[in-house]
Length: 104
View 1 (cartoon, rainbow, N blue to C red):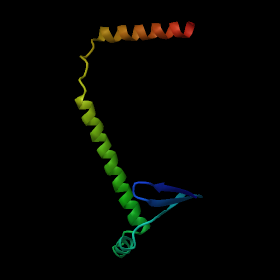
View 2 (cartoon, rainbow, N blue to C red):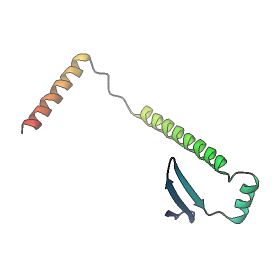
View 3 (cartoon, rainbow, N blue to C red):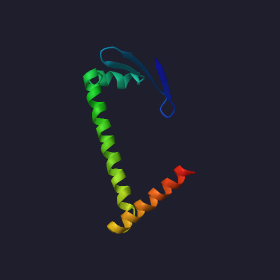
View 4 (cartoon, rainbow, N blue to C red):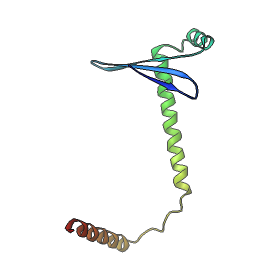
């Protein structure tokens, strides 16, 4: 069993992984009593609900990361497109450099 202390929120997250036919991980979190009781009454602490919420959050995070990367890429000034001749010359130069390194 591994435990990780999150310094920012002081939450203890314990993870217990059991390997069998399928990998199953048990996660234990520490919540304020009132929040835990409300979440339990709302049916939010079931395995199925927690799995769905985690998958949704991971998908949203991945989408946000993708859009962030796209924004960063859009901000970069792209170099002028190279002609086929320029590409061929770069390839020749790279191969010559590689041959020199491998020979020495």
